[in-house]
Image (cartoon, rainbow, N blue to C red; front, side, top):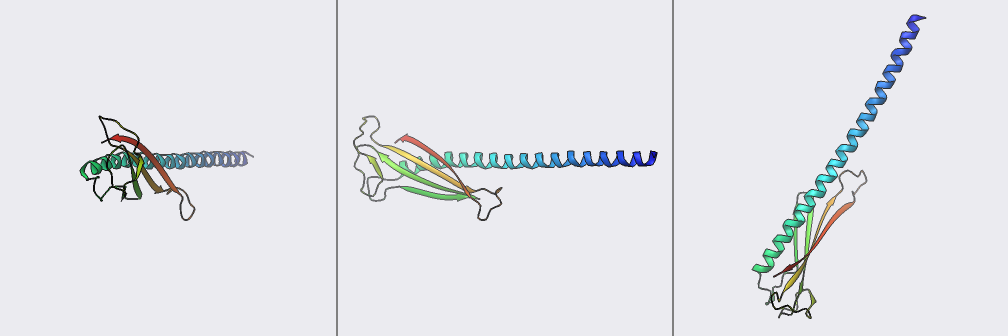
Length: 145
């Protein structure tokens, strides 16, 4: 009788330990998935900020009164694809190829403004479906030129 009780106690302890181990593994997997999603989102936010600054630099260096108006910038970094759309606001003599939102806005101190839309897209690597869905981060800013 005593040996049977010891065997039963050992089986119950093993089942409890296996249940706790399964719970710990499940929780650990969720934490890793959350950390990966947060890292990818932070990386896409940093890329959007960098490409916004790059677009401002490119517009100021580009001669927008001629036929080579800058409307789009595209790039990629690892799994991230970046697409920048530039629109112009202001009463200036822009070329017809420029994406102009409004000519009616006049400001003596800043005759030309741009709207920079940055889209950073990447694959959700934690999703098991094939092909994995795209996640897109969007940042819009208005800049005086």
